[in-house]
Length: 69
Image 1 (cartoon, rainbow, N blue to C red):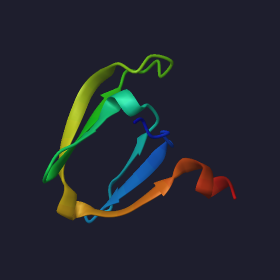
Image 2 (cartoon, rainbow, N blue to C red):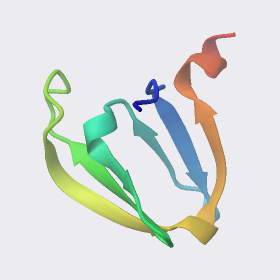
Image 3 (cartoon, rainbow, N blue to C red):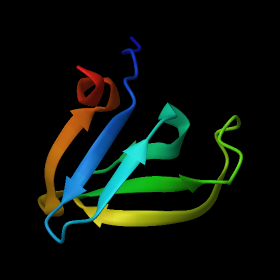
């Protein structure tokens, strides 16, 4: 069963925030989340760099379309 992907923004405890626009650029583990940082051309879900973030440091996750409302 697949679930629909919604582009989201993750806000961390240190004030940093990351936007995830492609489901291929995020992978959730037991205690960490892998975020692929996309190449300058975001039409392809290919990353140039990545962040490995402890789940305990994610304070808020919000859909990107929520900011438009």
